[in-house]
Image 1: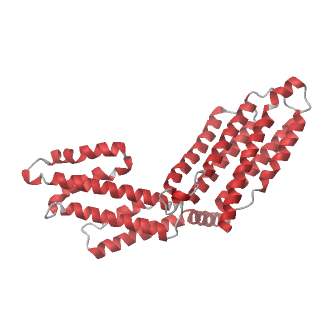
Image 2: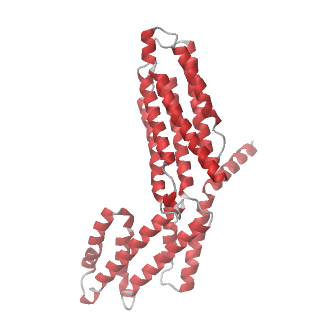
Image 3: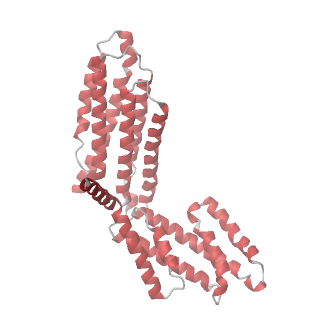
Length: 351
């Protein structure tokens, strides 16, 4: 009885290592590398280099470059302000007043650019700890050197050690949106007008969260070497169209007439839902790990079967239901375009 549990635990560990092992390796190498270099150079407080490396290293190269640049700019600003305020130390001004002078201007900077939040922190450290250095401005110099070292090490590690480029992260985040989209289609098509709105809202939020994460990563991709030449938003545009199509499918089934329920129609709609799920699951698999998107080609047959069934009822009822095949055809077109994008990218990668 213990062996299946042990096997499941091992499988879970392998999955975690496969998903996060690269990032963990970069964090460890960045931390120990920055510490070793800082100690070798004899910097005053080497832990600042380590902390900076850990903060700077992100899941992708573009994210690391973004974080590194922002942290370096914030550090330089904070060190300069702290050094300027430190000039007032010999005049026996209360430390509370010095803190107010150092933090106030940088608080406005942080309000406008939250990425520079390190600026007031650095200013406070330099202002309060500067008295331990002679001359006092030497503390500001050390702080800039230590954080600069951590930033450089963090970026170098992200570029060299098992690099994970932002474009791959975009694909994985887009793939995460396809699961909730398939769930939405299941709700709309199988519960036709009887679905719970709170469940639908939750699934929409999951899709929007995945798209928002991919959009942030797309901005990071532009900071990567050669990133400005990437069409990193092409999958996002296609995914937004699919999400919009799914919303229209929900509207088409929201006021589904009670009399529009007979075995042939139920079977055709269920078959359409299963086909769409296989297609979206295949796209998600292809985006995350590669694979075939052949299930997309089956959607046409499922739509044709639904249309044939809807041609049978009386004209008034047919008019009420006829919008569903139209919305699904639009969805099929955008899913096919999405699959074509993947095929083009895979062909370019193979070439």
